[in-house]
Every structure is written in C-alpha cells, then in structure tokens.
Amino acid sequence: MLLLISGSTDGTADRIVESVGTSNVFRLNYDIWKDYDFSYNPDNWEIVNPVGHKISNKNATCCFWWKAFHYYTKDDRLIKSEVKYVLKDLYGWFKHRGLAKGNSIFFHEHLGKINILSLAKKYFKIPETNFSLNLHRNNFKSKKLVTKSLSSTRTSDDKVLMTTKIPSLDALDKNFPWYLQEEIISDYDITVFLCEKKLFAFERSRKDLKSIDWRQEQEFGYDKQEWFPFELSSNDYASLIKLSKDMSVEFGRYDFMLEKDNNLVFLEFNATGQWVFLDIHNKYGLLDHVAKWLKK
Image (cartoon, rainbow, N blue to C red):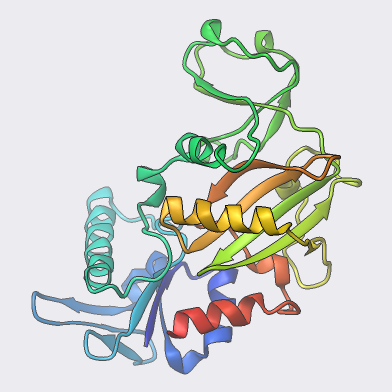
C-alpha cells in the first residue's frame, strides 16, 4: 500500500488517490494530524485514519510525500516541530529501505535554483542571473530585468513574489535580497514534466497573458485547457534526460521559454512543481503514467 503524505485540501493528492485507486493508497493529511491514531517505535509503526483504515510497516510498499511542509497547522511551535520531526523520521524509514518515491523532501535544500542553472547551462541557454544582497555590486549586461522569489515563501501579509518586471535597478531597495534575471522575450512558455525517464512536454501561448508570470492567470479547474502538447527535439529530449541524471532526479517539472528561433531557454526545475493541470482529463496519459509508477 502507498503512503501518500500531503495536505487535506490538495487537489493533486485527490487526483493521485483517484488514479492509483483508494484501496491502494493510505492518505495522511498532516495538516489535520489530530484526526489520526499514530504509533511509532523502533520495531513497528501503524497509522489509523478516522474511518478505521490502517497502514503499517507490515503492508506499506512505498511512500510519496507531496508538497512537504507546504501545509501547516495552528498548533504551538513545539507541537508542530515534534509532529514534523516524527513525519520526517517515518519518511526516513521508507528512504532507508529504498521505498521513497520521487525526489527527497529536502531536495532544494541541497540543490537550489542557482546551482541547477549552473548544471543546466551545459545543455541549454540560460538567462543572465544574479542574486545580490547589495545592488551596488550588480553589473548586469541586460537592460530588461525581472525579479522573482527563490524560496516562494509568503510575505507577512500572505503574498507571493511572482516573476515581476522591474523598470531599473535604481527602482529597487538596495538592502533587499534580490534574485534578478534577464527578461526573456518569448511567445510561448514550455514546461516539461518528468516521471522516471519519460518526459511530457507542453506549451502555452503568451498571446493573451496580461502579466509576465503565467501562474498569475492559470486556470486550475476542469473547464479550460491552456496547455497543449509540445514536441521536443530529439536533442532537447536527450539533454533533459542527461540533466535529470546529473541532478539524480526522476520526478519534477522543468520550465523554459521558447525563443523565436525555436531554441529553449532554461528557467528552472521544480522538484515538487504542480503537474496535474497540464493534463487535467488524462487525455495524454500523464496521470496514468504517474499512477503506474507509484504502484511499482
């Protein structure tokens, strides 16, 4: 049985359960951990959900932790830390036995976005990029720049810094930790989902976008299809497989922009990037492929 650790409101987790089959999945929503009975000792562990379904070291076959620590509770800081610690320990039980699916929940702590760019430039063009704690020392060649968040952490007023155009370096607070990149002019966003050694590539037209970051206008419902299959060149496909091997990843989403000469410009890799919206009705077999992988 698959142990799926996620949050109670996560739509991707809903689709995973639907695709893998409810009888094959035990879903642990860690934002409502108080609804579960959980026992864990050096010899055995067992979790029982509110309706009496159980998973334990005796019937668990693998673990997939989707969006680790993306969902939080309002508990005391110590209580949250204790729950977080034991869940990481349980994840380690699977990891030690080679039963943890996907990338490590600590992936981006060891391989961040700037490091990934340094690996990707071996295979693809990348934007001019710089992180600075002191803008006086920035020497950008590019005149058109964007800024974005490295951590995607929400601000104190619950906002997220999406990719945003900036008029000039002079307009920025010199003492803020800015992550800056060259603005890439493109008519299409390209995103490529990786699962095992299979790549699912999709394109989205930027024609009707009002903002530079497509995420601000993405429809995540069932009604509107905004991404369509994109055919990678054999060279780009092979390069992505090699890059994935270099990073030791088997799951995640690559983001690119497509220049007018049809060259891909690498933007970033998201170890837990959303993917269901690319094939919401499973028209292209993306959900089927993920379900088959999780059942192995």
